[in-house]
Image (cartoon, rainbow, N blue to C red):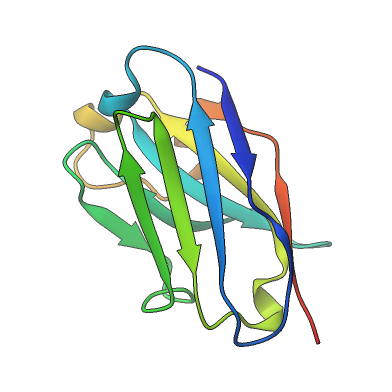
Length: 126
């Protein structure tokens, strides 16, 4: 599976931005898909994830502001980010969990994701 993230950029505080992650491979619909982010000098952290059933999970820091969705026909996962804050500035990575159907719940652990896209940079600044 290859993942290609896009959509990053510069946005003012309070603004919105949408990220996309296009995947290759025939089994996309079975995978759990997640977004993680990493700010300079900080560890990578979980942002949001969505599994095959459409169930979602969010980090507390983005709950109510970010929305993850997927289009299995297009093999694409999206992250809509609203009410952005300077602390949302980071490189955002999409990832695929090939074992998500075997798990209880939705993983927010980066080591449980098998495939990673390149990062796309989001900068929230005035």
